[in-house]
Length: 225
Image (cartoon, rainbow, N blue to C red; front, side):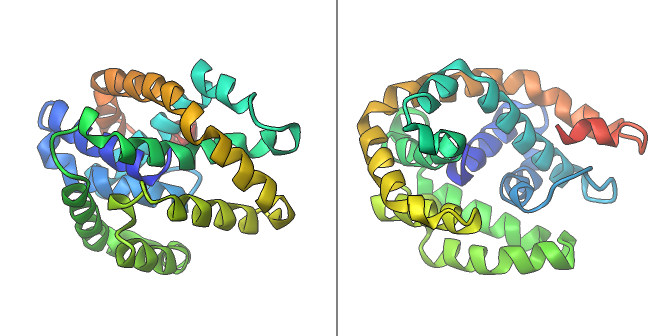
């Protein structure tokens, strides 16, 4: 999943988990911060931010194993199949933005502002390396109000370019853009399946809060998956 879907699920978790409202800011910040740090989760972070990062990782693990996503990856050309899960993450935000009213009553603009405020609140907990990585992206995210505007195909093409540039695979850009455009309509049905499955799984993932409370140095390594 990409940023909009992660943030939407984080907010939904805060609404559906017992006492989830007390975790809301950390869940929203963690939905974004988790993409800018790997390895064991720092036990010194606020509980709600730890939970947000852990939820982000659980969503990623769930999506990586979902059969609908695997089937969709198989439809990409062989040269792109290795990167297809990343492309599907990007497309997921397009599908969600296009069909937002089918899932949520609140607006994307409301969610986006809550997320930006949460990032501001918890930015003091970023390491120097994370802060350097995130500053430019968060500036762009806010200036474009990205979370509210993923239905604009321009943002999908820009995200694809950014991914391939980081992977040093820009020669694949034209082919990737064609493949994503081919998936633009045909992949929507698969998204509706796996996104709904994630929403249905959310109540079970409330154990992630307890997992943070019980975390010790000896078991943190297991929590990175």
